[in-house]
Each structure stands twice: as C-alpha cells, then as structure tokens.
Amino acid sequence: MATTLQHITQPDISLYINGEFVQSEAGETFENFNPFTNEKINVVQEGRKEDIDKAVAAAREAFDNGPWRTMKLKERMAYIYKIADLIDEEVENIAYLESLDTGLPIKQTRNMVSRASENFRFYARMVESRLVGDAYQVDDQFINYTINVPAGVAGLITPWNAPFMLETWKVAPALATGNTVVLKPAEFSPLSANLLAQVIDKADLPKGVFNVVHGYGETAGDALVKHPDVQLISFTGETTTGSTIIKNAADTLKETSMELGGKSPIIVFDDANFDRALDACIWGIFSFNGERCTANSRLFLQEGIKDRFIEALKKRVQNVKIGDPLDKTTEVGPLIHTEHYNKVVSYLQIAKDEGAEVITREIPDEFKRGNFVAPTMIINVENSMRVAQEEIFGPVLTVMTFKDEAEAIKLANDIDYGLAGYVWTNDMKRGHRVAHQIEAGMLWVNAQNVRDLRTPFGGSKSSGIGREGGHYGFDFYTEKRIIHVAIGENPIPQFGK
Ligand code: NAD
Image 1 (cartoon, rainbow, N blue to C red):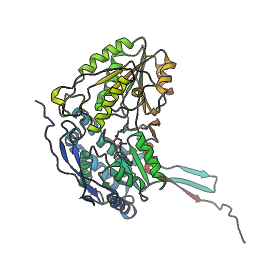
Image 2 (spheres, rainbow, N blue to C red; image 1 turned 180 degrees about the vertical axis):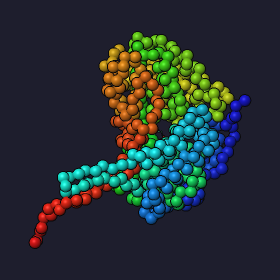
Image 3 (cartoon, rainbow, N blue to C red; image 1 turned 60 degrees about the vertical axis):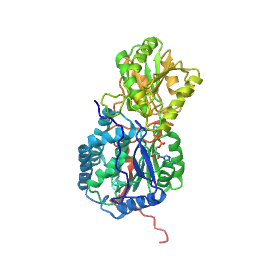
Image 4 (cartoon, helix red, strand yellow; image 1 turned 90 degrees about the vertical axis):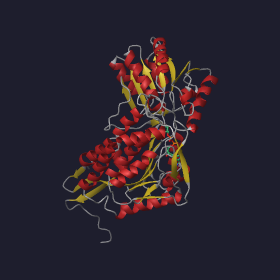
C-alpha cells in the first residue's frame, strides 16, 4: 500500500528576514491547502509592504556594508557549495514537501529536486571560471578593461509549478555573483521555499544576504517590484503578470528578466520515429500535471500519420496513471489549487462550445476531493480556437494537422507565445530547417525537453524577455564596469590656459 497524502499537516511558516524566522508586521496569515484532499496543510505568515521594506533594508545593508560581495571569491563559493550539500541531504524531504504542496507526482519531484543542488554547484563553477572581463588595448595610449560587479539587491518572484527548482534557479546565480536577495515565492506553494530558508540559515550565510517574504503577488510582490532599493527583478510566471511587473518596475528603472507563459508546438512529420515521438508528446504534455511552461500543448500531425497517431494517443491517454502524488507509480496528480482547477476545466467547455471534440475520462470517486483533471486530448481543433491559442496549463493536449513543412511552420508560428518547440522527423536537413524557423526561444529536434544548464533559457514574443541559464544569467545579475587606464601621455585639451 502506497503512502498517502491524506490528513497531513505541517508546522506553520514564518518569513525569513535578516537571518531570522519572523512573524509578519501586521500579524496576518493565509492558509495553505493540499491539492489532493483540499484540506489545510498549514498557515503561512502573510508578508506585505512593511515586511518587504524590512527585508529589502536587511538585504541593502548586507550588500552595502556586509562582507558578502567583498569577501574572497573562494570564501563566497564555499557558502554556495555548502548550500548544495545541505540540499542533497534534504532531497527526499524537499521532494515530499513539493508533492504535498503542489500535487506533482513524487517520482517527478525527486528528479526535479535532485537538480536543485546542481543549480548551486553549476553557478559556483561558472563564477569561478567564466565570470571574466575583456581587455581593449588602444595603441600605446590606453588599456581599457571590464570588470563584473553585482547589481545590488535582487528581487526574485517565482511561480508554483516547479517551486524549488525555479527558486534555486534564480537564487543560485544571484548569490554566487555577489548580490543579496529577497525572494517572494508563490502563495500556493510556500513549503519548499521555507525549507530553502532553513537550508540557507543552516549554511550560516551573513545576515540579510538571503530573505524570504511569503505573501500575495498584488501586495508583497508588488511592493518588491516598486521598491527603490531593489536593482533588478527576475520573474517567472504568467505573461499578464510579467507585463504588469515591467510597468511597475519602470518608475524605479529596474532591470527585469521575464520568463513567461507558453503554448508550445510539437510538430510530427510522417517520417518521424513514431513510437519515440508518441512517448515524447505524451510525456511533454502530461508530466508536471501539464503545469509546465514548456509543455508541448499544441500537437501538429502530418496528414499521413494523423489517424494512426491519434488512435495511439487515445489508448495511451486512457492509461496514463492518475493518483496520489506520493505514490511513486502516479503519472498525473491533482492541479495546484481549486482556482486553477476551475480555469483548466472551463477550457474543456470552451473547446466544446468552439465545436471541438474533448476526449477525456472520469475521475475515480476516491480522488474526487482533489483537483484532478484527467489526461485530456482535444481533436477537431482549428488553430484560431481559444483552446489552441491560450495557455491552459493543465493536462490538456490540442491536436491539429498539417499538409507540408510550410504549413506546419505557419501554423506553429501563428500564436502570440514563443517559449519552446519540438520537431520530429528523420530528415535531419528538414529538422534543422524547421527548428530555425519556429519563433521560440528553445527548440528540440527528435527529443523531449531535456535541459542543459549551460544553454540560454527563455522565450520570444509573449513568452519572455531576456535569457537566464549558463553564463547568460550572469549578464542579468551583474553589471559590466569599464575601466580606462592611460598607459601613455594622451593629449589633454588645455582649456583656459
Ligand atoms: P503568476 O503570474 O500568477 O504568479 C507568479 C508569481 O508572481 C507569484 O509569486 C505571484 O504571487 C507573483 N505576482 C502576481 N501578481 C504580481 C504583481 N502584480 N506584482 C508582483 N508579483 C506578482 O503565475 P503562476 O500562476 O504562479 O505560474 C504559472 C505561470 O508561470 C504560467 O503562465 C507558466 O507558463 C509560467 N511559467 C513560465 C516559466 C518560464 O520559464 N518561462 C517557467 C514556469 C512557469
């Protein structure tokens, strides 16, 4: 009998400011729910503007007067490696908390969390080896060179769909490059962010270097974005939220990095390896409960294989195993929250109203308390329909067809989003050609989404601005400073002589 997520409570959660776990100034709290049962897991201190002010003041003081940015690189990296080691010790616990909080299946959270410590190690190694400057010689007059300096206080705002992974993905480069941090995690998934605060507390970083303020986006998040002492905002979340944040960050002229929504195409040509394309397509839409920014939510099938592929999909969709997120055989768990569940379910009605056909299955009675949406495919879809254009962010695949390469590219690009794309063909010239023409930040040819931490991560069009990952993240978390040094007697104009 598998462990089950019934009736689980957790200790209440505080804010983490200036090296201490503290209550919110107003003494307000919010409740955190288990998506499998919709029962309360715990209560979380609700940070607001005054708490953000405290956290930013602590981070500012730590940046301006603390040892963090001035200490020897080796010493700072020792802290980063220590955080990675402490995360490794907690992998099982973090994976458990993540599944409890988000409904993501434990097998998937284990994989995801084991990559989190690598985020820290990777960025420590990167800072040690790749944070380099350029030198420009100007005849025998000047030698000009660049140095990289940390930007200051980094405001990091994260979503609930892969909380720990995305938090560490931002915290690691921000800290490794010498910034101090205020993290505002998503209100639907506070558990693992709290554990990150505990881990960093245990690593004994100087006070104020890392702070966590839980709370709502419109209050705590908004205050962080508008705070004049915060130099940059790295945001991952919905496109509309990203656009609000850019507007709100404008008054204080902050740099922003935007990792936003997606509605990514997977294009399968007649000559593709059928079984591998099928496996990748199913995994790409149903893993993470379909709550994956890079999900291949729009399937384009070439006409020659469409019937066979759709039949195979129908069988597999019936078999994808829904269940308790803590059961290691579960493939699809409940959606994060009733609010999000209602949004996803509303799209199934929208599909029917638009004249498409929805193929799904009943949720067993034992799971009805949870926010379950069964693996679903929508066929007879036109690319102009809302279900083909809008991000549903659940286990819902829309299926369309195309005649030839030109039509596939046209349909794939006929959308506002541009995060990822997947191309399946055994004609490699065509594979490259199509990938080059898809308007998206990240393309895979004959593969599912397999990440390489060294590569740029981000989207085009409405899916984002800027790139994180690899050394690309450094440009965001550091400022380039150019030092001009005269090595000769360059002529100086002699005004008023
Ligand atoms: P969301 O935009 O609702 O919330 C994200 C975060 O922003 C939360 O912490 C929230 O509290 C905060 N927030 C909300 N309003 C704010 C405001 N006015 N000012 C400051 N902060 C505010 O997104 P979500 O529902 O948590 O996450 C799902 C979305 O994230 C999907 O659209 C998904 O595609 C996207 N996503 C993108 C990537 C990527 O890398 N491109 C990765 C994961 C998720």
